[in-house]
Length: 130
Image 1 (cartoon, rainbow, N blue to C red):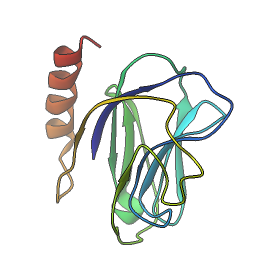
Image 2: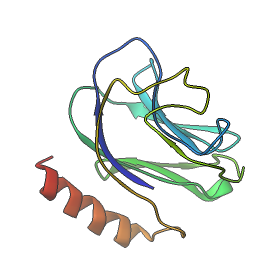
Image 3: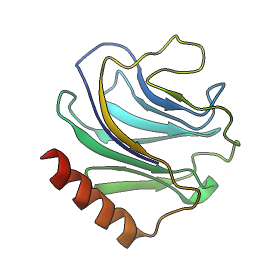
């Protein structure tokens, strides 16, 4: 899952993507971290809001990856819940909506290699002037 998006500074959770009933979601938390979840949260370092970012996530149990702009991937266990019907820009309940903009979303049916993630990240950064 690749997302080119920005969120405006806000004191709430912003959801970019939710794979139904809070499964396989991708959020920017009020702590300033990005988070993916498929049963277990996996969080990034604190990253400031406001600018467009290339965000990517691989939901693959203990081999999950969360990345922002191609720097300092976070690897770990995000869980292994199956995806349902996806929601873009909000969680499945509508409680956490994105306050920001989404430029592009790309969904793959397999985990990309590190070199494929780098290539796509660089392409998207160039395309959107990030």
